[in-house]
Amino acid sequence: MNQFAAELRKLRTVPTTWVITGIGLALVVLSALLPFLVPGFGGDFTGAAGQVASSVDTIGGNSIIVLIIGVLVVTTEFRHGTIGRTLQLVPSRTRVLAVKLAAGAAYAVAFVGVSLVLVAVILFAMAAVENVSLSWGAEVWTALWQVFVGLGLTAMLGVAVGALLRSQVVAVTLVLVWVFVVENLAMLLPRVAQWLPFQALNSVFLTAETRAQMPPGMRYLEPAAALATFLGYVAVLTTAAVVLMRERDV
Image (tube, rainbow, N blue to C red; front, side):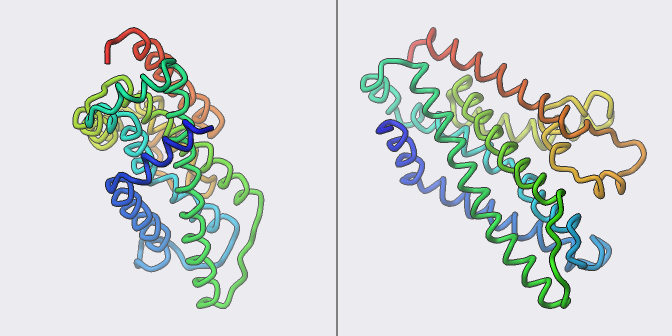
């Protein structure tokens, strides 16, 4: 428990964490507002359960923020040379990585929690302006558990990537290039792209209403299959990170 608290303290005391989190929360607000305020971007606000669920799902659309923080959980220690001291205090490298995975997941839960408060404020404000009531159907509850699980796994994936690469610059650059370049180019081959990690993660957050509006050529996995696929990536990379963490010199 003391080690877990120490990991959370490391996250809180690094200014980069707060800067990236602030950017992420701003993106969440922007993503939640766009469908209702920009003509042609979305439809009229009715407060239907599908719209509420879509607003919750916009949090998952900003998973890159949680991914980067996950990377920083490990790479910050290597960058500043504090990993040696950490391993002196806790000789078990597997335990060190496990606690960092838990800290990354805890950050993801906190990020989702704050984001939900912001999205709720937007929804209630829109409902008051349009004089409508908000509906809380099964779609909303599905969106809630999906965003917590999806971003929790995303943070763990970031920790695993950070442990594998160690270099902060290389790790952050790689994840940004992968997410924004490689996976976007792969969409030229929809049958292949749907199995890539973040295409699968995006599929988790697509509501039935959103899927119905997708162009005919787009291919997305069903939510359960998408979540299982992304979980597989997390499991493989985490296992590789544990093995290499135990074998490599600091």
